[in-house]
Length: 59
Image (cartoon, rainbow, N blue to C red; front, side, top):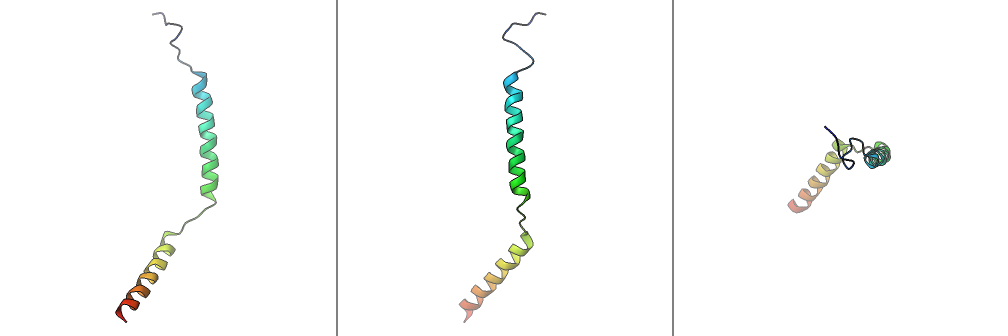
């Protein structure tokens, strides 16, 4: 079975795009990796805010 010249298994642009995409992912993960978000601390602060608001409404 002969393949047409337009049909190829290897696409050079695909590997180039893939490598640039991987570089972007690595940069993004470096930025996110340095940032740590503590969910429990956030919830605790929100709970304290809600209690203050509730206390203000009651009074």
